[in-house]
Amino acid sequence: MTAAAAARASEPLALVCGGGRLPGDIAAKGAATGRPVVLFALTGWADPAVVERFRHHWVPLARYGAFRRLMRQEGCRDVVVIGGLTRPSPFGLRLDWGTVQVLPKVLRAFRGGDDHLLSSVGKILEADGFRLLGAHEVAPDILAPAGLFGTRAPTARDDADIALGLRLLAATSPFDVGQAVVVGDRYVFAVEAAEGTDRMLARVAELREAGRLKMPRGVGVLVKAPKIGQDRRFDLPTIGPQTVDCVARAGLAGLAVAAGGVILAEPQEIARRAEAAGVFAMGVSAPEASP
Amino acid sequence: MTAAAAARASEPLALVCGGGRLPGDIAAKGAATGRPVVLFALTGWADPAVVERFRHHWVPLARYGAFRRLMRQEGCRDVVVIGGLTRPSPFGLRLDWGTVQVLPKVLRAFRGGDDHLLSSVGKILEADGFRLLGAHEVAPDILAPAGLFGTRAPTARDDADIALGLRLLAATSPFDVGQAVVVGDRYVFAVEAAEGTDRMLARVAELREAGRLKMPRGVGVLVKAPKIGQDRRFDLPTIGPQTVDCVARAGLAGLAVAAGGVILAEPQEIARRAEAAGVFAMGVSAPEASP
Image 1 (spheres, rainbow over the protein chains, first blue to last red):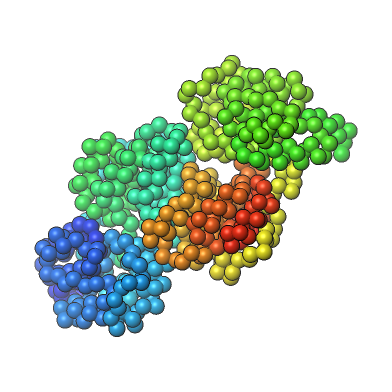
Image 2: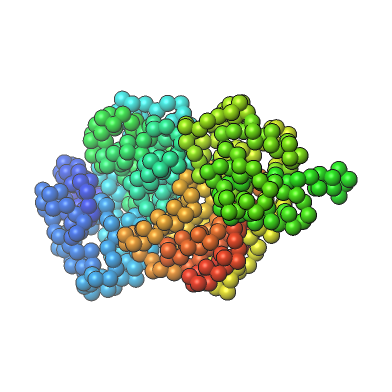
């Protein structure tokens, strides 16, 4: 490490926090390295119970001027953006001047899904001289490891479904489609786009109940991977315990995520629920290649 | 035309009919060429009002032995399979011996969606010496023509969305995914798989109502095309008036289908409803190439 890098690594780290428990996990891991952390909790998304364990400021999304000023006051230059952000309506928000300045970029972000908005926030920060880090640069162990998370293992049929799912994701990757699919016995049940992974899995459960999928319960795998060549500082796909619940409700055999390319929120709980539900959960090697 | 071909063209044409009005349209067009037509109406799917205008037999799906015998009695060798077929449960059907013989093939067909079952029925017929024709070989004008079906035209943004949708469909084509997508302002709203086009469009409508798609109504296009290299004797994607209704409910600008590769059920009604709903409907050239 150079002297400059060492100096920077001792500066407080800013964590821009959306919803869920993941921001708290990252903050704890960052703090455990001895680096001070300051949370910038997005009002309406961040969970007070998660945020209040750390030094923090509540900042409404539409008050970017205040946000930037606070970050500079805290001496933060390195920023991590993390956590779920269901998008607000662009109307009905009170805007400050800093926000008005970046509004064209924000409005463009409303075009896409959660990930688009989150990555757009990241780009705006960078344009103001902050350095955006990936959550895994602060806490490398949040990324899915290779191998089984529990004791359940995929069958040969599941392995074939995982391979097909990864090839399909590689094929759709250039189109900025949501990066998850459900494949069962080599048949594609569902492809995620704007609806997100949980709703896609709910659809598979509904199709099964409606008799539109004739394969028995226990056939089918959720496969999730980042886009090829994706900037891994943000937008990394994430699964959590609720993903396991959705996989079980959809009657699938299990889930496979790209090792090193998908964040596990609450990994112990993921493994525990997978065991309890009788589904497998694992990290697999996802080649960065076309089908 | 050779003498053998001319003789064959004077033999009665068998139409295996699923649901909807399309089988009646094809039968009328076939009959209009002077060729006798015999409808084999699948009990539970075919519409009596459609079928009873023509010489017909009602045949349960699980009674393939009876089906084959009737076709031979009628002197039918050329067969067209047409119309929607929501799949039955493989259990609870009374089977005859002819069905038991082909049952392994039928059960394999339950793996996929409607199209899979329909194409599987086609393959079983062929194995018994019948010649399977595409509906468009009997009635070429059922395929979508190139150009606008009504007076509404796509904007430049819609044109870009159509082009992106066709490239995405080309990319997913090798994976046997449902061949329709919804794209709005270069963002992929939805990709069809086992749920079918109408349910995919219902999802877009729901995402819009839930505030998950921030683009205003009037942005977004349904794009539908056959799989690349698809056997066009069956499985050709079809749209009908209800597709237009779903497009309108999803708040889209319109729909674009591959000219010559998608069947239009009730084309006048498609055009009429598109006009009434203020959406465009058109056939576009879909290159048989990768993105």
